[in-house]
Length: 334
Image (tube, rainbow, N blue to C red):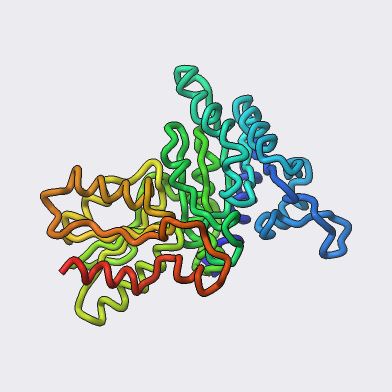
């Protein structure tokens, strides 16, 4: 059985299942428990900056923990908790705040298992909101998943729909390694059919969400919907596109990327982040390095410009990848 949920509701349900099935799972973050008794029921809860975790403190009052406004303190504490047997789920309000807690992720969470010869486990999940689309301006709208995807020892996932969000989050919480779980603003309100009960979506496996033989459109998070809209318009012109949802940025499903490349010979990678050192650049390099013989035209990237995210609504919309830019990239391949 399934029913329609939005991405935030699917995330909430995944955390509830994880906490219900494992007493070692705890939730930590700013205002995940506190922030105001908005329903007048005597329980002080906000559910995080976007209300995603609302209701969990009622079910697990001893394991939903408000923290000081200190990302370094939150993540540092969570790394220690994970190293000593807990499975913390941390809410980092926005991925833009990654810089304030980078050391415990870069030099502790990502390295401890390696430095202890595999004897240490760091089952830590960091949930964070990523990307533009809500007029949150330059300091709250960045797409920094490329940073965590580039750190050995960290896993990074980014779902494009509610069903994958639930399954990927359950897989992340149960993984014995640290996972950065990105919730793209472009799909936070997206609704879709979500299976009931407990299930996992494997980390490191892409999903082919549309099949076609003429060109491969590769996206993740919010750009999957952009690829799908572009594919629909291209189909009206007689151009059929594969649409590949990466879902996981590290580990990256290289086999799925090379398989769709071999099928179509043309690749367009759509990435909400800026172009330098981006996931789009990494995928393009993989196609050239390991799939060169399959390429019929150069790989095209559709990304944000190398610029901070503007606050202005029209400028923000122009900043984001669009179906029209994807179609233009396809046409430029001949």
